Figure 1 (cartoon, rainbow, N blue to C red):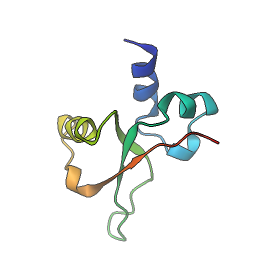
Figure 2 (cartoon, helix red, strand yellow):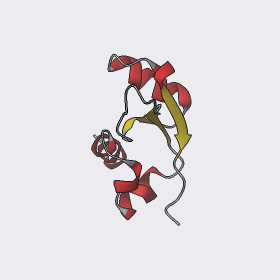
Figure 3 (cartoon, helix red, strand yellow):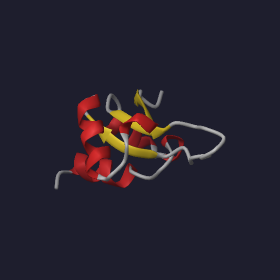
Figure 4 (cartoon, rainbow, N blue to C red):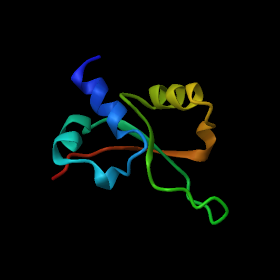
Length: 80
């Protein structure tokens, strides 16, 4: 497994705000999936998928048995 793949794996389940500076630099430009907020579910704001494209994020969510329709997708910017 490459270092980039390990960074992605370590970031799954964590809040984007809790990523280290080094992780943010490594993941800058990648797409992430975060569960939509709703008063009924009150999801934690954590990364559920990371990919180079939206399609890659959707595939990762589906592989984990999650419905992509319940997620918002955004691109991680550089830390500064």
